[in-house]
Image 1: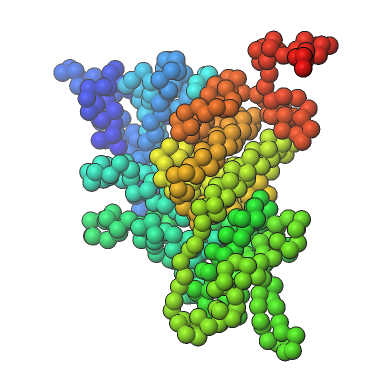
Image 2: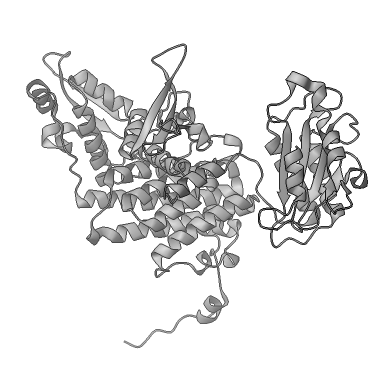
Length: 589
């Protein structure tokens, strides 16, 4: 406490402290202000004693670090507050945290020091004068509530609530260490991106861990203390990020972001049961026939490479969320002679095209050919054989899924806001995988900027919806497709254009429900994508000018199958069209 008080009254590291004085405290500021000595220095002995005295009552029950220190700063554009206003802010914070509630004579001892126009320092001793140790668990959330209350009271810049949508930021030591080693980003940020990308592109838990290793991350699984075979969590690290003992610095999923714990990630991959509406790894609802066949062929090859018997092979397909139909011999009903596979939720308009036998996928994927391979060369594997047309179909289907999600969010913004959250969450998956597949820096910056807007408040996992499942399916297909060749880059630009519209729709959704941080994050991501497209032909003007954006009601009406009204009308459109009651003239001949 003594060192902190002397720092607050000192000149600062660069002489930035001016006129330090107490504006509020457990007594009146005049009673607590350190006296001036004849030589101009401050006498801190009385203040030191008053603040440190309650620690003697707790003795061994003291906190290891008994000083509570909170700097509170106003935004640069905020008005300069008076000492009285800063005193009210300090008292609001101390009351809401429970450290010094109004009327509590035995509360902790604290002071608020101001030595600049735009901020104060609130300092408290974590010991009550009645010998009780104060509780500070989750005090950050209560401080956030107090800040939002005073922002509204004094008209200050509105900041984000403590809704656990923000990712865990690197600590100061992590940033300084990254700077010393010449890294552009702290390891925590790099690992969070690796985990998000691997989770978005994975179809199974094992595929997730394989994807992390492919990204160059070290992976450590955590096992249950009751069942040593049950994996309950994981941690990741960079091979070149070491602690003083020369060991890797590990980060658990929860230390990266609230939605990256293993239990929450598993909800993305678990196929639905009869009593659950969880999303399947891949849904065929929005896939073309070309994409469905290419994806099924890829999954069948992977299952065949990891199997040695027909039962194991078909079991792997079912575990991957694929529908399997077994074909048995007419002579011996117990003899398995073939199989067919299909994607769940795929429309059955053409029943013959829904199910694919092994021979329809590839000549070497029939069951007899697979038996021959398992018997002669069980360790052999096959290479992926996606054609350029199939890769382009994956991108086309991703654009179609983004358009469908846009329409659903517009509708749900008006009718059922909670139903739109799953698509907002799944959009992050598509952005991260598209950034990796294309290698485009604009997409990567957009994915990073969108990070906070994807999460539901307070760590909730949204209920799966068809729109969200379509986006997740597209992300998993793009992870398989990779980068398409130069002649087909138009498909990439179509996808980016639909993503811009999707992000602007999500920004409107967040703005309607007064989620300013999420809205700002989404608009930032949309601007990064707009830099990539360089305003392509047909892009609506309101994408670059949010002030011209139509209302959610207008968007929903324009997107209805039979539009009720246009999304946005301008004076130019009214003057260039025909006058009411007149018909356009036809040219002779």
